[in-house]
Structure formats: structure tokens, C-alpha cells
Amino acid sequence: MSDFILARMLHVAGVVLWIGGVAFVTTVLIPALRNLPEAEQRLEWFERLENRFATQARIVTLLTGLSGFYMLHTLDAWDRYLSAEYWWVHAMTIVWLIFTLVLFVLEPLVLHRLFQKKARQNSTKAFKVIHRMHWLLLGISMLAIVGAVAGSRGVNLFAG
Ligand code: HEM
Image (cartoon, rainbow, N blue to C red; front, side, top):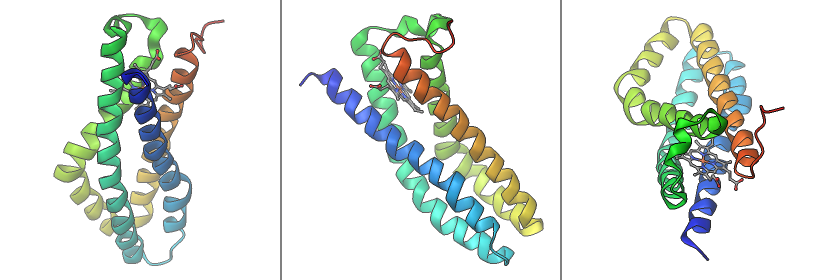
């Protein structure tokens, strides 16, 4: 088996674990928490469950990024960043950059404390905002996924 195929297998396995987790948090976990009557209980469960997922997400984010850059290197395809036709390569990289920034920098330094503070001031509003953010991230991740599956087979979703 070639290194490229191995990298592709790891890449897709990472994407499934990672974005599948984001989908679960967005469509199941946060709606269930928003339905809990007690604000303090909502925050406590969110912290417990999402913190656990954040560790898993950090590992798969690294794996997906490394395997993705390795594939670009093997294909010698860095010039795809210069062409709009390869918008799906930009989309994958942007999704990866956003999550890397959030998981490794913003969440530990700012977002964790900020969300706790906001949730204590107005829990309903804080959970509404965080739910919207998760929907946005899930939306752009799904766009990157469908774009990459079609694009890596030579089909551009947005070309007529
Ligand atoms: C640093 C970030 C990333 C880089 C450099 C990268 C790079 C690549 C490359 C080079 C390919 C193979 C393209 C080809 O065969 O022509 C690929 C495939 C793919 N990537 Fe990424 N990727 C990154 C992040 C992501 C993310 C965050 C997602 C999901 C949201 C993703 C989803 C996919 C999918 C679904 C495929 C197609 C797999 C298949 O159909 O076999 N990638 N990626």
C-alpha cells in the first residue's frame, strides 16, 4: 500500500471522528442541554461532555492536518492554493485553521472562561449563541467534505 493511500485513510478516518463529533454536539447534545430546566446543571453537563470531546478533537485535528499536508506534498499540489477551481482545498484548510485556533489557542485562553461567565449571566442566551456557532462550523465542514469528495475525483460542484 502506498504512503499516499495510508495518508488518505487516516485523513478520512480523522474527518469522520472529528466532524461526526461536531455533528453530535450540534444536533443532539446542545439541544438536549438547552432543554434542561436548571441553568447551573446545563453548564456543568456541557463542560463535562464537551471537554471530553475537545481532547479527542485536538488529536484528530492534528492527524487530519498532518495527513492532509502530507498528501499535498506527495501530489506536489501546493499550487492548488493559487487556483479558485480548487476552492475545496481552501475550504478544508480554512476549516482546519479555525478548529486549530479554537481548540489550541482560543478555547484554553479565552473562550472557556468567557462562556462560563456568559452562561452564568444569561444561560439561555449563551447556549443559543454557542449552538449557532456550532451550526456554522458544521455547515462549513460539510461543505468542505462534499467539495473534497467530488473535487478529488475531478468534479467541481460549483462549475456548471
Ligand atoms: C490542513 C488541512 C487539510 C489539508 C491540507 C487537506 C488536504 C487534502 C488532500 C491533499 C486531499 C486529497 C485530494 C486529492 O486526492 O486530490 C484531501 C482529501 C479530503 N479531505 Fe482534506 N485536507 C485538510 C483538512 C480537511 C478537513 C478539515 C476536512 C473535513 C472537513 C477534509 C476532508 C477531506 C475529504 C472528505 C477528502 C476526500 C477523501 C476521499 O474522497 O477520498 N480535509 N484533503
